[in-house]
Image (cartoon, rainbow, N blue to C red; front, top):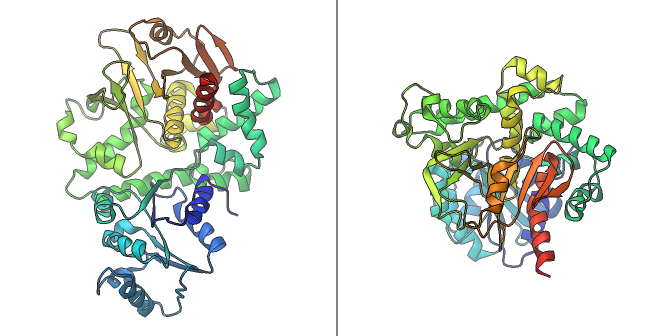
Length: 449
């Protein structure tokens, strides 16, 4: 069974654009890129030409006569004579292009030719993707895809769009959820946190109606990611890359205010791990949250490059990395224990990334003033706090009241509570964070009017 994804609507709009360019769908392994692209292709074209460069090595000679469309089509037909190429009715899918980055050079020819639609996909694996980009700059459109977000999870569970949109309506109206709504969405949210959004994991959970087997699938995905390090991380210390990747859950659990290399290895220094974090970011298997020098705009031009936090872009994989005792607490007893703050903070970071929001935080030296995240709108800088308890938000209140930070007029807090508002702080349940971008856009539009 195919579960609806957000890329589905994007692909339909892409095809409808009369001047659309070849498309490259990027993202980590096993997030559902190929399944979604094939689903779209089979429902929208008479002819689908699918080439997987990882599984079908025979296609690695198709550029032997050059990058022009005629030579390419001729050489593909020599390898697979049953394939049909009908102008205006054919889509060519190049999958796993990190295995054959030279194919990207042909995208300019396809764009100029215009007879065939082309969609490429591949994992963002280090220098290979950089080569793909340089080979096709100006001749393609990029789409960043991630594992399923909470809304896609709710679709898979059978929830109607109006039921999901009611969450945003509650947020905009400042109307608390009733007890039934709050209970149902909290339960679904916790299930999603434990499962994450990897399609194979979600499918197994929905089809079996239990968590049985999902942990095995998650851990296999983690092992596959580590195998990718050994396969693709050329010229770097592969053991150190894997050490960085494995250290993230423990560092989050200790609520470190920056990633610390000495937590991986005693007396370790950042220079010994040069390139390791960058490789993992390129591969799409970690997300970086940058520390601001000051809680003010601009964000990207206001970063302390020596300080950052790292998250997993899929909270389910974070959960799967925990020890067996923690697994039982989470999956059976619903007890988040010491990882409660880390789990929710990682989920918020994941939701920010999937909405296209940047990841920024603040920690003032020699002070207790700190803030988990920041997001900006056209007119405001908004501090966002993630609470694993009901303690007061002293830092959030301090930032709002400080006259030096004129761009901060209100803050947002996510936690285990209902919708509310007090002292210029909007409070929302954790499960609302996937609607944050829509909320801020509509809130600012309404305020302007």
